[in-house]
Image 1: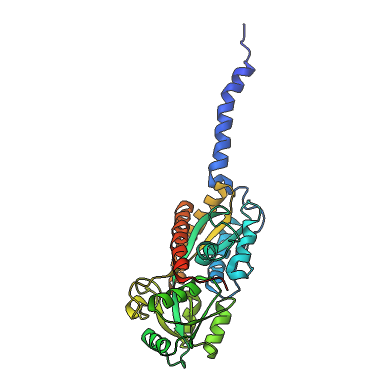
Image 2: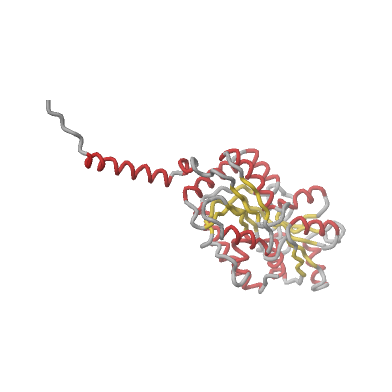
Amino acid sequence: MHRTLPNPAAALRRLVPLALLLCAATALSPALAQGSYPDKPVRIIVPYPPGGTTDLLARAIAPRLEERLKQKFIVENRPGAGGGIGSLAVAKSPADGYTLVMGTLATHAIIPVLQKPAPYDPQKDFAPVTLVAATPNVLVAHPGSGIRTVSDLLAQARARPGAISFGSTSPGGSPHMSGELLKTMARIDLVHVPYKGAAPMLIDLMGGQIPVGFDNLPSSMTHIRSGKVRALAVTSVRRWPAAPDIPTLAESGVPGYESSAWFGLLAPAGTPRAVIDLLQQQVAAILRQPEVEKYFYEQGAEPGGNTPDDYARVIAAELAKWARVVAATGVKME
C-alpha cells in the first residue's frame, strides 16, 4: 500500500497562523499577562509625606492588590517639590509596571503649568491606569480663631488685608490653588503658608499657629469630627454626601466657586498595555468592594475605577483648566 508522506512545508504553513494568533492573545490579554506580571514586588510611590490623603488611599488599595495578584505592593513615600520629586522619579523608571505613582491633581495638572520649566510632561511621560478617588478640598479653621463661617473669614480679610494667613499641604497643590482661587474670586488678600504635607499643616492649625487652612477632605475628616478643627466649607459644587452639614464655598458667599481634587495610579510611559489593563481591572474591582466603598465615603472620597483612556481625558481637561487659573491669578511656585 502506498502511503503519502506529510508535507513539512504545508504543515508549517498551517501552524504559522495559529502561532501568530496565540502570540497576539498572549500580548493583548490581561488575563494571560497576569501569569508573568507581577513576578516581583511592585512599588507605589506616594509623592507626599505619610498621613495625607494620597498616602491613605495608596495604603487602602496596596494590601488588596497583594491579595489579588499574589505579590508585594510596597507604598513608598517620596515627598518634595509639591509632589514633583516622586512623580519625576516614576517618569524616569523602567516602563515595566513595577514602579507606579499615586498621582494627583497637583502633580499631573497644576505643577506642569505652574513650574517653568516643567519637570515632566504629564501626558507624554506617564501611562494612566485609573482614577482611584475624587474628593473636595475643605476650608478649615482653628476653633479659637474667631472664624466660624466663610462670611467671618471674608469680613476679617477685607478689614485687615494681608493680615490673615492660610496654610496648605504643599506649594502648588490643589489645596494651595483652592486658596488662590478663593483670593481671586472673593477679592481678598490672604498670605499663603505652604507646608510639606497635610499632617504638619494640621498640627499647626490645631495648635493655633495659623487661623485657617485648605486640605483634602479625607485627611481632615477625623479632626473635623473630633472638633479639633472647624470645617467652614467644601470646595465642590454640591455638598459632599459624607459630610452634608458642611456648606459649599459657592453657597457661603463665593458664587460659582468650584475646585476639587483627584488621585489616581499612573505608570511610566511605554508600560505594556496588557499590564496597564490588568492593573486597572484589579483596582476597579477593589474599589467596587462594599467595605472599600464604605471606607472611602466615610473618609470623604468617592471611589474611581475608570478606564486608562477616560483617565487620560480627565488629565487633559484639568491641565487646560488650571492653565487658565494660573494665568488669571499670576501665582508662582514658592
